[in-house]
Length: 256
Image (tube, rainbow, N blue to C red; front, side, top):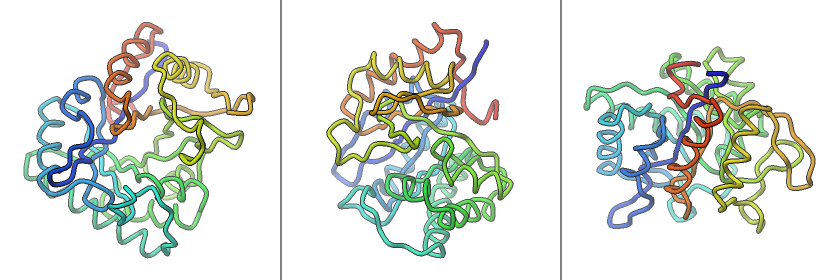
């Protein structure tokens, strides 16, 4: 194979009586799962069920720590301090680790969620606190960050294995950041557009911004948002398209 990439999805985001996503079906196609830990979504029962499903299907399990904002689904910025970021990441890693350990598994990675992820992409001090939290709990964990972002730089500086993450279902700005969800063109819903974007990011290390210019980008892992309307369709078609382009799809812990 000429190239290799991980395919991850945000899962375990149901809460109580409210069901979000198609976790069991999507796990048949992705290689890594980012599991919510109760702050932005998820609850203990959902965490346990999602961990069991992921282990059954031999999927890499990741912690998906978010801001403590259930109503806003963790997608609203909060003015937290670096110490608060450190604490909430340590807390949520510990919560998921308990369920993974109880089921006989092992954590693979940590990927901040939503606003925390985007804030850390640009804020070096916040990123360093997050990376330090991951390292202090388990230096063997892989840290996911937006490709080329401050979070990736902080992970590398701290000594963590760090994965540059790209997105199948989001558009990009000229500085390599994701288009705000408040903009109409933030989401990609056409699977062929998503496939074309992913293949180009993996094979050419480039993505076209909303302004039409190319942005240089690394791609270790590709995200599909589990709550997206087209999530299951994307999860089915993207790995098939990647393999047709001689790109191997494997969990990040097996090759990074």
